[in-house]
Length: 57
Figure 1: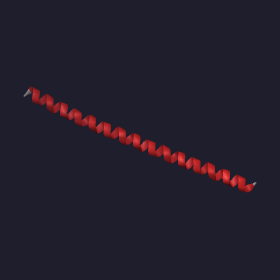
Figure 2: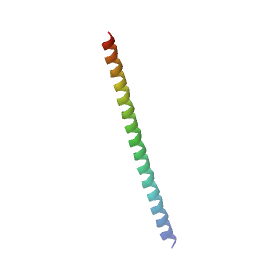
Figure 3: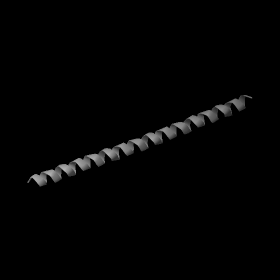
């Protein structure tokens, strides 16, 4: 019975670890997505500014 409880606990811990890994990878994915989106916007702004400045000249 004791071993069975331990196995159950290990299984639960394994589940928790799986969920944590899932959350971490999801978080990292979201961060990467946000970062690339921000970089894209900054590049767009810089390009637009450069374009308008050359247009003004």
